[in-house]
Length: 471
Image: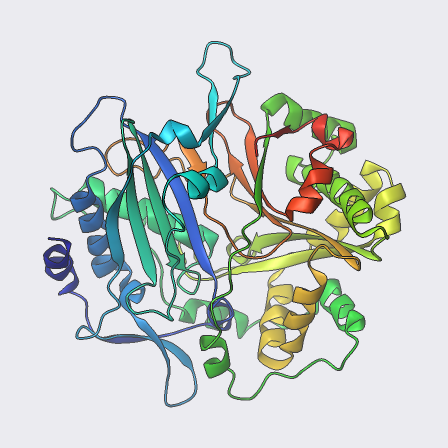
């Protein structure tokens, strides 16, 4: 049935070759994912219909995102490209999955700060994999045929909840681009019965808008790049002249499977800001709190003081350039604050906030251009970043991806938006994702941190003043 549906929509896809940007190619081996849990409040027998959801996916790809069904390759002039061949499309893997347990078996609950509302529910991914009979959900990859985009509609026995799992190659989008895609897919699904419907905010897919912009920019090296070079104990490896095949051939990076969840109610989140530095943003003061408690956990776990503590925020370059806000590709860069661990341990919240801000507020196109140049000329810096940005005896690390303000709750396929946001295991130890929690207005912090370190965190009085440990 779905094969026929796919053909009906994808037969409109035209042959084309789309040149990949350097930042696109640097994400090979990584995927973007989400778990969105919807509630069938009206017991609709057609709720989250696989046929409609798949049809909407094929339609939005055929009409607006042909790159999703392309296959990566290297052009004759050595450029990384996505080849869209109508006779050899990379067909998305879309299917339904039934779990023989109610969804509630995998929920954790907490009382709502608003006593008039239902309890707050959280999806426990670790419990799901342990008790559901599902060992792991498939990950997007170009190293297996027809798997660059994977969708699962997950139905639970005896439950009115349905989960939508999405995994797509990071090469296609950054976080903002993926969120645009999910909402555009949902819009197409809602309007399947109107063949003349066009997207309200169609994407800009042409990578040339990025290269044209950066051709006009003079690179300025960010302080953290200089720092990483200084930390390297061996000469920084130059990038080979023909680097596209190397990046495209990157093997899949395994997901980090020690995931934990903290929840901050709105009042506790504001208390963090008030107690640390009420003149700063919530995200910045949250980073200060985490940098302190994670460092303390590292000291206890490794029985030594790491020399450096790193805080990382991704930033969206669309905001500071003339590149269209609806650009769908990769345009996110890293702002990194290298801090001396002793200063983090001894410093006041205001001092640490100012130090992080000094590094991470400098998010210009000139810095982004330098990052592109580094990938193209000194790829060894990326390896040094991988060695430094982790929790070990030598370094402490907090990376924060802020999804709080992305329109994830508006991903409505015609049945209403999701009730609960979650995610699968994702790459890199030390990284965390911030999600808005619409049930009580707080945030959920999904943390990639080693279980032995989390044992220290979950007993930290400094952390527990503000956060509730969910799992």
